[in-house]
Image (cartoon, rainbow, N blue to C red; front, side, top):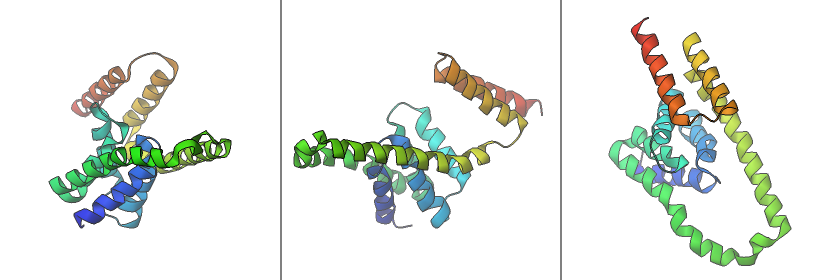
Length: 172
């Protein structure tokens, strides 16, 4: 794939999301469903890679770029990730007082809710790909329960899940 086209597709996904993971449905549609460049497993790996380290939630687009076109693709992903940050100041200057308008606020809320629905819809195939057996399903359920109902930090859950996964592989 042409690196410039890759940049434009990733930029489209990043610009149309209001938070890092909200771009996931568009990335999945463009690279997995429509163009068949990535598999759900590769997209899962990109998301995990982007979420493991510190930084913005949308950092996974750099990994997507890498999976598609190697190091030049990763650079295209990084540029797509930072481009909106450079454009937001002139845009906010242009928009100005429109952001205080109740209709604009309602439209923004509607777009955020719609992106949440798209995120859930695109997460289902990724979750199905990640749930490969009873041990993986048990880890997923336990992680959800612990993160939802306790104050345990997420890195403890990731370390426990990794230890259980490695233990399961060693003893199987």
